[in-house]
Image (cartoon, rainbow over all chains, first blue to last red; front, top):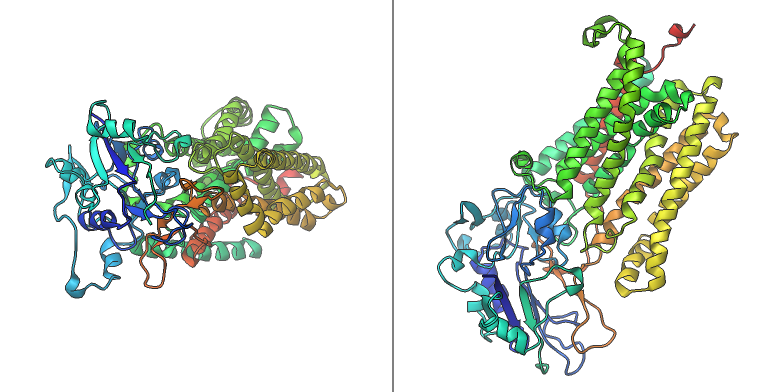
Amino acid sequence: MRRGMVIDLEKCIGCRSCVVACKQHNAQPAGNWWNRVVTPGSERHLTPPEKGKEYFLPIHCQHCNNAPCEKVCPVNATYTEEDGTVLVDFERCIGCRYCMAACPYGVRQFNWEDPKKATARYGYQDGYTYGHPQEFRLKGRLVYMPSRFKGVVEKCNFCVHYADKGLDPACVRGCPGNARHVGDLDDPDSRVSKMIRDKNGFTLLPEKGTKPNVYYLPPKRKEV
Amino acid sequence: MSTSKKIGFAITGLLMLAGLVAWGIQVKEGLVLTNMRNSYTWGLYVAGLAFFVGNAAGGLVLSSMIYLFGVTSLKPFAKIGALCAFANVTAAMLAILPDIGQPIRLYNLVLHPQWRSPLVWDIIVLNLYAALSLLYLYLLMLPDFQGPLKKIALKVDHPKEFSEKWAKRLAPYSLAAAVGIHVITAWIFATQGARDWWNSAVLAPDFVAAALASGTAIVLLVCLLTYGLKDEYTQAYRTMAIFIAVALFTHIFFMYNDFFIHYWYGATEALDVLSITFKKYALAHAFEVVAPLAGVILLLSSNVRKSAGAMMTSCFLIIAGIFVHRFLLMPGAFDRVPLTIAPLGMQNTEFSVPIASGQYEPLMNTFVTEWHYFPSGIEIAIFLGVLAYVGFLIILAIDRLPIVKIEKAQT
């Protein structure tokens, strides 16, 4: 079993619902966003770089098979689960940020200050907070917690706390265009494997040799 | 104690204290007090690691030249070499410590080391080198321990012969450990395929070359400060000057060799990275080349070597140039976001994918493609504190230990 994701760029409308769902479900402190959606070629989101040329690209941790972030971590705080998911153990991380230097996708984020303090900068009414309220341990390792420690690295955890309940990640469930799909990349008959095969699935920065478990399907036409 | 030593202790002591206070504040508030952010994750602290590791090369140069290659004129300076090596390699570890977000968890390095990480290898080899240079210093001082220091002296029948024999035996190991610290520190960077600026096979040999230049320049500087110019040392200073010059020319050759190959092929990514150093940091780059070159050209002139002040200025130019070289490890790697894509269906367009900055400020962009980094006051205070530690330790050791040959003993 190799858990992978397919994002159909044909179906992505650039609404950033996945970004919001991810941020809210995973209690990301102010300033940190595990997931982002951009308009390639354009300085501004949702602005065509050229007339008739516009598509949207969601980017988060690519859960690489040859993950440089995992190999550089001096304390094995970043590690790969049996299903290929790359996780961060918040209790183990020493905050050296070597993994952030090593990641070519720029998806890793740091808690530069106490996350409670960071989020207080938002100035929400009545101390409003968000995020899945319970911490989650996978085989004893703390891979999700609603309020992170100061000085540790965080990134997309493939919603491992929901996977445990048999649920798809928040970004998949929250996508109004149904552009995101999760499945077993090892099984050639799985829906995701078929989609990659039939629709010319590609990965980002293949020249870096990271072998991501996140695939993209190219858009056929540009949504204008 | 001389007045100059007292002033030295006062200045370095105060700077160390200020650095410690700055680190305390940073531990309390978090690394938000630095100017690093998600897109620019390493700055002055990591550049400091590379700088001090390089400076620690001096001990190796002296001990291997004396005991492996028979350059006996350098013998009076062997102890200063070992001392500079110890001071700088420990400073390298101190420089990287404030970069750690959770310093109290450092025990995880012992409990859960991840053997594929170059950082783990570096910590091992730096500690090994620190222990080795301390042992070396002890061995070289052994025949000269007097008074209360006699208590720490190893009881051997012929301390002079014993010291000489073991210094010779240890020399090849210290050479291996010394080359090891530069190569492995370079591998921390050179292994990273995500950063085109670092991902080069020439980085490790270049680290060795730059280290031999700045490490020897530091030893020469300390020798000049303690012994001054004397006829009996002319030959030794000349040897060191030539060695520094060869090392520096090799370093500049390695660096431009790498630039040339990338420039000739002309891949967009490589040209983008080069333009950061050659355009945005043009002045800094000019300094990292011109200052040490001027330094070694001056040192090579026998007229300049007649003035201690001119020689010290030359050493300072070399060390400062190498410092700027180490600092320039960062902009080339972090100024540009590594994830750039060619948008589907568009010609001749390269698009940098923005990164969440990591800090929310009402007037600041949430996502950034560029981050202009210059160290914050806290970072500079901590770095100066570590630099002061090197000076403090060297003055303290020279004051208390039999490192500098006493004039009276000579006559």
